[in-house]
Image (cartoon, rainbow, N blue to C red; front, side):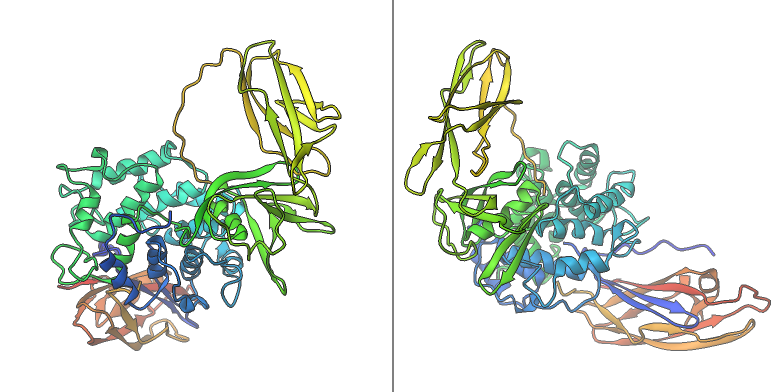
Length: 606
């Protein structure tokens, strides 16, 4: 049977419903396409935020309001996950993290473990026919602290790369036409999975996006379509995550940037409409737009109410992280830094409060665990309760309680060959810095022992750039200093690296969860009645597709027509009765249970 071309969704918010067919038993699945520092950006006006706050809250509004710097959000909708697909849990994880909470402990179950245990199979996440659950799975796991080199991240990344279309883009599913929305989301996911802006796969994807930009500066869902706010938003967020500026001439057409086009779609009440001709805006498009105009991307990392702090994490064997993050507490600093430094972490709840149990493979055992300092002082309260003040520096170390922090004072940064370097090692006793006797001082690959006064002088006989630090038993490893020896020619390069959906406007319901034709014999015809109801906001044009066993593909009819020729239209709140007929041909000998899948596709009919 020749298959007609599939309809292209009219907008990124379109839903499609899947219904499974079976001779003896049936399964049903509804697939929801998951798409997608602290103050409100100048690009966002207060009406946009006020509009979102007046809407029914969901994962997307939560992420958007967090991106806009809003605090005290109503998160009750995130306490449980109503759906049963990978994307349902991915959305919840992303929203919980954006709100500054822990997705492992915030809900009724551990959302992260649920995603990894129930939906990770066949070296990918969720439905192997879809990419969106892998794309958003990568970003959700990254937001929750999963390292980019873990097995699930590596497998999901490889699955995406293996299915990148020849034009450089991605579709929502295997074999589909590349679209701007999924391509932008894939770029953001791959950046979380260890790729960078110069990776060939990323460069090809960026080229795909640039080739699809319309003359009005905006982006369409696919080539030939009108620019829309959803597509603008996804691409803008991806551009920011790439470390680029979407207002730059490189991203303009006719001197119009995608930011300009997106802003042109904002309505008087603050909402963003999908396309120019739409009468009103929607919560979904406004959520996407707010994130993009706040110069944020996915995952949205919560900075609301937080100030910027330096955090250093010293593991048992090496330094895990040194970066700056915005956080409100010393424990939240660990959570927020994970997406920057690419480490995994485990935070547990106890009768004494939340505490850091593990970072990467360093987990609390015996007398050893994770301890913290703020400004080199060991606070007398738990890290989850310690509210950081502007300028506070946070230091975490793995070891026994009572290890003093250390530091080095070096005699310079730039040296000639055969110059002497003097290093003084010190530790903090809670009141002052004191000399660290016999400190073990590392200079490049060499280790030296300081004298009883914590001092070391060495002649620098080798040209190069070297790290200098102390790592002495019973003390916290010091920060690392860098020295240059000899005529070192260097050039500075800016480096950017990060290691580390909405009620639909189109929706419909099908009266059956499965089409079960029971037991049939060759030559027999059976009929099953079902009803499709338009529950959305727009009239629908509906088509079908059947896949799976050829018995269904070749012999299933809908309303007396072959499924490939079937279509119907549904006005708002109306329904349509559909008679499904299956004829098992006389002489059919391939006995046994046969399974297939029927997909109803809907686009706006107006």
